[in-house]
Image (cartoon, rainbow over the protein chains, first blue to last red):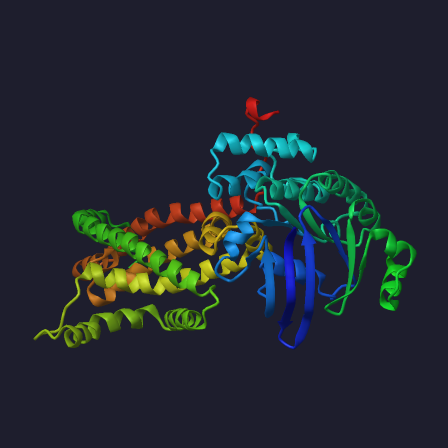
Length: 242
Length: 243
């Protein structure tokens, strides 16, 4: 069953045509990796899915419900959460408060229950001892793991990753990828914009290559390592697979 | 002149008017507190609407801020004193100009004037919170209003408390312009006492009284500034939370 359906999606910023007639279907539980040069529209695509950007034209359907301006908050709350390049943790709250805010305020979970759940997720990302720290006292890798735990706390079936390791120091990339690999064993639909091809090879069911606002090529990860067809794909891969 | 300042009998005479000073100080405090409430209310409304994407609201807020920031408070207060009664007469259709009470005049004067400054403080405070915070909140499913309430404004508050306290301090001092239009405030009464007695003790006493109100506010500004620069320290763990 299609979890997400994107039809004829266009996004224009001023004179810039960022997404050109994108069609895409993502199955429930699928792990999709989006690669492509910067400015190719990959981030904009997942931001449209979460309705952080309003599509200029076209339709996005999640579980057979069309996302509109009117129901976007409800749809975001119910179906998708996002992990950002810059983590975007709330700096005035402790790690634990970051995790419990939405469950308490939105899902109306009792405080103790929310805390218990948050602690479980923190344990999963290996950070239970940091519960009462503030984000700015953690390393980048730790902050991103907290951000993933925060996304898990709202229990949406889709998690969108917007270049989650791009802002990290190299030695911290793996700890975040490990958490994501661990996560991929679950029935969560994951769409991940990343350049980490090792990660793609390990977890992705499908990889799509975007350039200039279009989906140029798609296939299983192995396809991109062995015989990419399009010249632009080849050129891009030759730059990142060194 | 200076010798007169050390004249004990003059001091005695000045202190004999302490009731009048007290009356003025009470008026000043009343105007300051009510004026602060009005300015906070106006500041929050105009500050928040200037950060929305609705053009017309932005323009209204801009006009308010620019007008009140770029004209002297003294002129504004004179206008309220001399002009407003006639305007109100026109609007309400009464037979005589509608005189405002001294208290109301002062509250409107400092309230509207400092409201413009506070609106700017609040606008810059909101804009200083990175956009990623709003996006994180939206992606979690918070509505616009919830995002403001739970995520943006709490972060704004810490940033704006020092300049806000500074506005309160200036507001207290600016209540003294009321003296120019027979306001019954501390400065007004002090000035009366000085002109009646012919010596300066009255001004010194009024300075001390203003100082008593303002110094704690200034100290508060400094404390808030230090606090807003500190990064928070980890909270103490409760035993049950250490899973």
